[in-house]
Image (cartoon, rainbow, N blue to C red; front, side, top):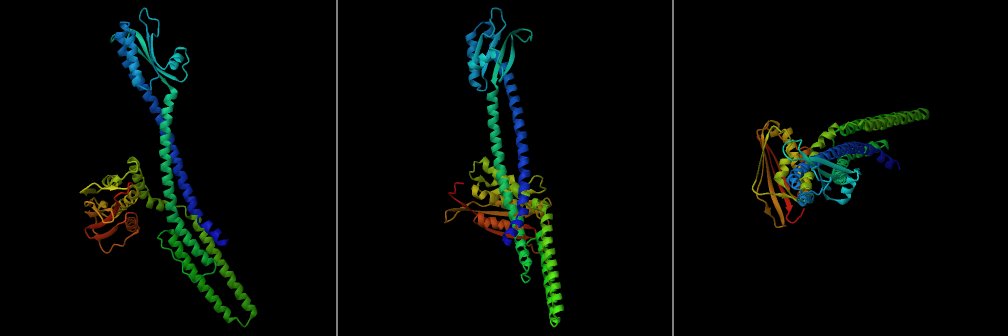
Amino acid sequence: MARSSTGSISSSLALNLSAAIILWILLTLVGVMLFLVWEARLSADQQVNLEGEVVGAVAANACVLPLLENDYPAIRARLQSMVDRLPDVAFCLVDSVLPGSVGAEISVGEPDAIMRWMEGDRDGIVVFETPIHMSSDERSVIGTVAIGYLRARIDSSLHEKTWKIAAGIGASFFIVAMFLVFVIQRVIGRPLSDLDRQASQLAEGDLHTPIHLESQTEFGHLAQTLETMRIRIAGQIQHLEGMSEQIAMSNKKQKMMFSELDHRVRNNLAGLASLITLSRQGADDVDDFAGSISGRVHAMSIVHTLLSQEHWDPIDLEELIRLLVPPGIIGKLELEGSEKVLVPSKQATACGMVIQELMANSIKYGAWSSNGVVRLHWRSPVRTVHGNIQVILHWQETGGPPIIGEVVPGTGVNLIEGFITSELGGEATFRFEPEGARHDFIISIPEKSGT
């Protein structure tokens, strides 16, 4: 039961951090959605106003001669043609002021809407009235054209657009939230769990197992501190045991020494537990964490957007590379491919992450850090005996700072190699030559993957 409770406590930081980030993203997306809905409503009203003015002007010009000639059938035919071509227009009505007219002689469109308008029930109806001039003189008005729209139809179109916006934002939030939960669990939850397990062993009295954590973050420094405390506690216990042997002849002194031993060990273990608790509570700075994954989140977002545009069909490798180039780079990218390469959707994210890591390393250490050139080219795809299409990519950097000494691969290189070998079914060869990085990658694309 103690181990289960401790494990639950150890995961609280990762869960709270995930919840905070997801809540922040959700509130941001809700704000963006409300703003987009507001903008869509304004745009819809502006579009209706503009359309009403334009349609009214066209209808007025079309009715001048027939109205002067009392050719009502021609007017009705022209108005009916406009209503048929403009599904948003509910009705079109001409009111003549010429001698002998009886008011609204001609009306076409939806009878219910026309009847409501003529009876004065104008709730839910938007009407644009345009005067009909006999000539360029604005005082020579011979009638009026009324173009009617139904507010319910306008709102229905707006609601449809709103639901599409909400669906897109919801899908984006879900994908980003799931990715953040996964990354937080991997970057924070896993090392914290390992550290808690080793600290629990120490708290239970295991002073022989070293405390070690493969991490350069605060968790790694905390593990080093706990290891130092373990050594000190073990030394103190050995020292007290030596003292207990010297006072074995005296029961009173022996009890006092064991009491002192018990007291000191308990104090040290209590201090260790407090240190673990304070460290958990103080681990609320996520700047380093956010900086290390911001580029990867951006890359995944680009891949997702491109896949959405292609309806999850295979995407063009060259287009993906150009979209992943960070804005404002001080270097140059040269792309050269003998043939078009289509990357299936199942491999698109891994391919995008590999390219993003290469570009990030170039910006930080390589050619793009000093206005250099990155040349990325690939050979013609080759069909293998296993029915796959094999593509060989060459990454070459020039004009950057010279590479001196042996380069120790970091997290980015390991991540690239992992994606190449596991997700892309290929091989990665890294070469760090003095004039710049020279990397070769082989990726395997299923010929009949479909996606």
